[in-house]
Image 1 (spheres, rainbow, N blue to C red):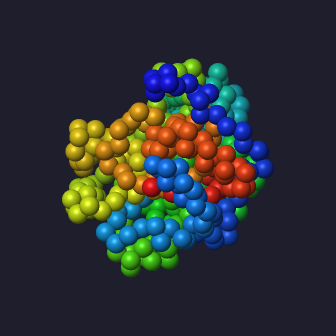
Image 2: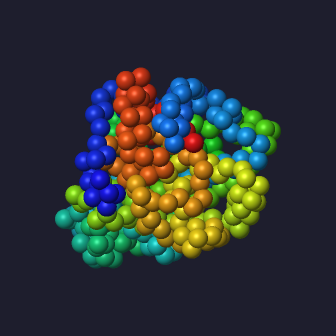
Image 3: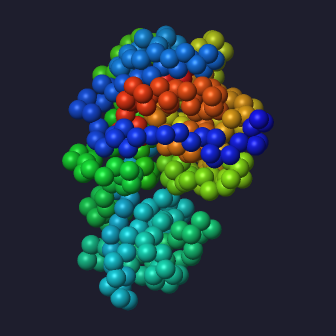
Length: 345
């Protein structure tokens, strides 16, 4: 089978519902770790804190330092008082956001919404190509402070239990607000674990990709090559580029923490050389893709038929990855955002 003929069903697997993690572990780094050899498919079972034994002096660990915003807003339509819900995806211009809305039929261009007794107001400007909305927000004060007070954390729909501490859906290195979902591979790291890695001589650098609809949007097309990713904002600094290029020249490895860090690095290297950049990416990585930057990938266990599973399959192979997932199910690994981790190297 050539890669262009792959369908979404080629990335399906059976996942018992009880393996979908509903809450984070007490200690972030106590999650399990499956180490997968990307060439042979060999598997080792560890705990996440054992990652220190797999990384060497001079290796570079690339983390996504985006911060999840309380992106879900509940308000009322000013004309009718009807309840509406907005999920903020991206700030396209100052105070102009792309959002998902419910119920969509009630929110046509020109409609006005208020939140928190009018402390925050919004006007629908346009309908996007994906069926979302472009909205302009009106307020007095600082937008993100108001959002912290009025918004709620946008946990994925497969997490049905209440999250008592919203910070557990943030990485310990989250800095730049803008994501509608957490870069979950980073949730396993503690400040102590990062310190241990630095003491070992592992270089730690950061990129930013604000996670939005593109990461989680279901593949609707029969053939995966017909799927189009929703664009997400990214930034990679010259400092990060310099560290990675220096490591490459010295024969050291670059380890991406998560599919979002991977997509940022590979976007910034599309010219053939890694360059500092900011902008919007809709890069879609699936089997057949030739990686330009990363030598290893730390990631969580992903949804069946998802673009995330396609990306990790591209880094090793679809056969190796689906076999690893079958083992994960047999060994009762925890799946998705609050679940266990995989290290592909």
